[in-house]
Length: 412
Ligand SMILES: *Cc1c(COP(=O)(O)O)cnc(C)c1O
Image (cartoon, rainbow, N blue to C red; front, side, top):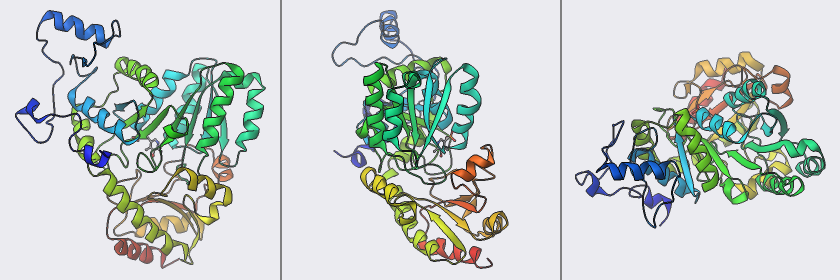
């Protein structure tokens, strides 16, 4: 069956809980062992001291290690990308930083796309160098085959242990070529004989419209706060991927203790039931909003995956790796920061707030808000200007959204 069907049933049996059709919240810190021998067996399995028998499930021990809400959510989330496993965290940043800390040690090098989410940018530029990790950038304009040739024949290439890409990039909607990154990883492994992982921040289009694992990625990372939740009522993060990577990530998570709580997991399990219909509606609304913005005289430029003004190379990459452009639109207004602020202050229906991917439409100013910490020259070199507004399109009536934009843009 398809994930859309399995989201209501997979991994939960009503008989476990008084025949409740919905899985209850297991708001408990610990679990009673049937006997001491079982407790011994559960710990041996949890610490990998022994292998499970055929069909044997790990027993419930303590909610930092496992909890039914966490396990059911992870099993359902993995289905969307046909991933071997998934891990859920109390925020997107805790998922992403746990991936970095799992696969990067002092002396290693991280190869990362630019721009990325502001919090990721901060962690990579302020924290990782402080523990001796080297950081190297590429962007949507970088010729990845040239970079591959250079890294395969240099010592620097042998230091790379993790390639990390955010695509489409927040907030410019620039897309990075996943096929070329999969090939880059394979080539580096070959020429240096090192273990290299590829992780993709899949928050903008995944898991419905972009499946990085199919292009050779080992992990998809998410801010589950965004589309996966879709209701602006929780903070969470997730990683899906290979069994080997997820085992390493979950091992570190057990000791950092940054797993999601039963309540957060329960809310996300509820949200996954409607993920596909929410994202479909948001994307179809976005196309209508986009065509209004494109033809508006106060709008200088729109930034949207696959759009003709992103250039032929960007269009070809987008067409190959994603069947939809999603629901995130960035656009420049005529008149810089003052005009952008005027528009943001005039919205009636659209809310002025950071975050994205929710049922309600949200707009913000990346230059001075989500990407405030990024150096100005770096922002400008990536076309992230102070004229830019980032709009996350929700599930409202599309005509109401267009009317709100019309009245907010009218004075410009
Ligand atoms: C929001 C976001 C994050 C961080 O997630 P939190 O849930 O806020 O910790 C990471 N990546 C992208 C692309 C995001 O939009």
